[in-house]
Length: 477
Image (cartoon, rainbow, N blue to C red):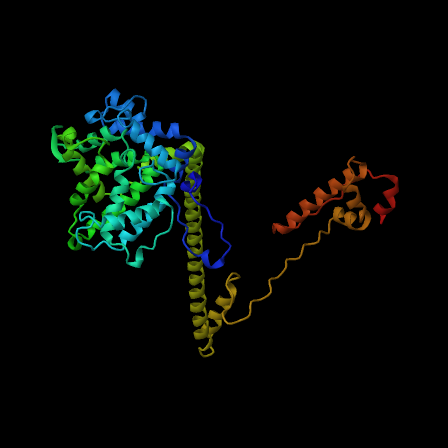
């Protein structure tokens, strides 16, 4: 498995039957991307948050960062394990997984054991009762040779497989959680709650412990993190079946803490009072294993902003603001339109009711016997120009004819000037004809206004106008 595969796998599938399946997006995608592409930036981000939760002195912080030599209980360290490391390198050259540094190839071989144990969790005393040493040696050789093993054949027992898994972890050059993290795990075990007065109590602060473990697991080497996840999940499922296998989370912690947490080449006497902390810490990891391999929300956000930047966040805010404005304007316009429609419908209903009432009234009057009263009512119906007699077809509206002016200026405009008047309108430069026509037009408008106003007829005296010689004949006419 390459490191790129560990980040995220995008598969373009053209099979139409699979397109309806839900797309699962890894919420830690940007976290894994930052870890792979910029490990220094990623480590600094995580360690700064670890020191926010845990008080690490300068020496322990330098050990966590790998800047100084490790100081472990009983003098254990890289120097004391020199020959052990040399032997592990030789085994690695021979492609032997037992006793060699942890690799993805070794995890792939060991996964056969883990997969088999998931199917046999009800065996009583699992991981506590030892298996047969002969069968274990045969199984060990097969794994070192890289061959696939048929564990379902019945040749091997569940206790053989469980014991061989513990043996593999015990022969690693360093514990699964590494030597650099040893002191930090002791500090995590000391995270306690505070009372209202700010005094430290004896109640463990589980939330802070989970958060600290989440951060610490992020900076583990990828092979160690992958195998730890597989192992803790197996132990979690085993503890859930403790009514059958008699193995609680604490009993399993006693079996695996020396291989996962304890430094190599140390004894119980070297650890002294730390043994209880380490065992309790291992039991805590088993119980909460389903939460420990998720990056905290603030780490996800920092990793996302590292790649997308603040522009994406701003643009998202702008989009939200624009969408909300559009939504409000759309709702306002819709409410206004609804109000207009309601008012129009109300007006239509009122008009319809009025017409029905008038129609009924007219029908009632029409059915009355012939009399002067009936004629008077019908006359009142027809008198109002804005009211149409119900039951009759609407009359065609009369077009008011333009009153023809019989003044002298109107006569000249119709008979003499004719169409020349329109052509002279288009002329930009005024001529004597256009001036004369303007005076005639104004006089005609005044006479028409007098006629329409209903005032007594006024005689208009023709005014002597100076017309060009060419128009004299028209004047005489």
